[in-house]
Image (cartoon, rainbow, N blue to C red; front, side, top):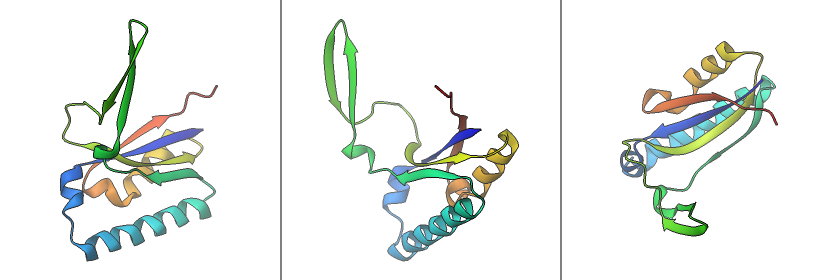
Length: 115
């Protein structure tokens, strides 16, 4: 079963991390991704650009509105994701707990609704 592991964190804190800590986090994610590949679970994953680079689109009464940035009132923003394919929810939760960001932010684990 496929799951999306969504990495949520405080973007302002992540932007102020010292360069050496940011470099270490990149290495940690590389090792994590390699472990997912080795386990045959990795389907994909990417780091997202900051919310200041985001655009939101919505359609109301037949009119398309294009807005700068997301407008969710939240302390944590979606910063990246991993798509994994594992046998069950417990395995997905185990992988989420191993993600380098799990100690600073929140990992949302959501099953994919196969089409």
